[in-house]
Image 1 (tube, protein in one colour):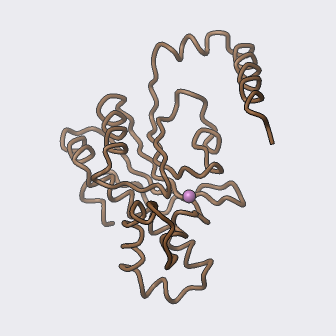
Image 2 (spheres, rainbow, N blue to C red):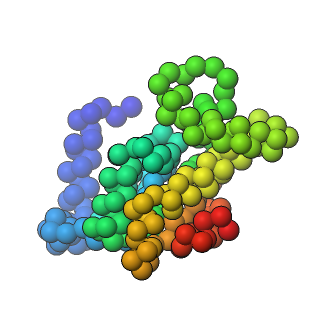
Length: 203
Ligand code: CO
């Protein structure tokens, strides 16, 4: 395991390497960020937004929480979403979940994990809403399917926030993407066409 000092050393070497290839990189970035993408993903350490999409610093605004949940009562995600849409004027919001998500797994389990069970309430509600479909699946397939259903559901939540509704009403172009990441392949897959207007949410 790396010691904490190693991280500071890694950072110094990384900054040096970036400056070698692009001497103005940091001064340019320090002046302004103009990302086109807002990423809402899982906190899981194996799903880092920039790395898996090949984007350098400055290109993606990021919000992550356990199991990529979007609740209309969560000021954290709403504040980030509003900044991304109203100020940064991103044209794409990406809700990205991943197969094998521990948070989604916890929502399937019938025992107490702690505070997290309250956080996962929207996913537990999803398991009830899709009870029959999920009951027909083996354990691994059940988890995978619930991971997909969760992404689809959270992307719809994004589309129904007042922030996104207002953006569409004033004619701002904004696409909400529903993606899932496969940990053992490193591959991202869209689960449906992007949502680009209120009428498109249920399509
Ligand atoms: Co996860």
